[in-house]
Length: 356
Image (cartoon, rainbow, N blue to C red; front, side):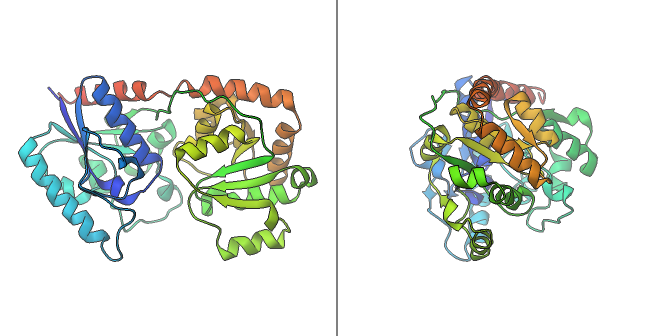
């Protein structure tokens, strides 16, 4: 009987704030609510999620950031201390928070792996940092957060279907009533490469309506580079775009005040920001790609992410129509309720039980 679960430290030493660490944090929390004894064991971390004491999280040092040249030694220390903890406490199962090749070479108990996306494989980019093949091949079960990721896993790693379970992520179910809308469009997260941020900016720059009536807020990740600022300057919209950062409380407030969230990605593994925006009463416009159709259904206005004119037209369409905005906000409120952490936890528990 599987009763004691250990989530390893990997993502909490890799990510200060983000979708993966938020997933592990909430999954751990909700598994304990339904009677399972699970714990996150992260001796050294940089996570914003560990600011409060929690009996289901074991954390000794939570740093603002890792000192220069200490990443490898920090991972090594975490892994060694984790092996000692496993030897003493004898959990029934390890659930890897991210790819941890070192740890799984030494543990004798089974492990489950969650795969969030295989975008690097789809782009044919080799990641020297993470050798995924070994943990994928040796996991007892693999959880994928979407059917898109499941299909990619089968395609690139030849994993058998009966080893994979698709379990959607959850989202906080507290509905946030939208506030009086301000004249800005929000973009959330990284902006490089497949995120397709530049096509969104080009679309904005070609719309006199948007430039006259709306500004853009880019939230999170990193501040604009000099290259990006020059790009905005050349398009004569430098004064129309601002960068901001903050925690989830600030982000939720911005969602609730925003007129629209735009997500123009060419590839994704899931895509939480649009669901977060829906929860806060913010309409969304996203790329017409398979994963977004799978997750958002009719709660998003879709555009062709490779067609700048179509991006411009769809953004203008929703912002010029108050009635369309209200309809999309209502659809968004219904949609986000489908993604509950309690449901995610129950389905994950069933995966664990299947290993008995």
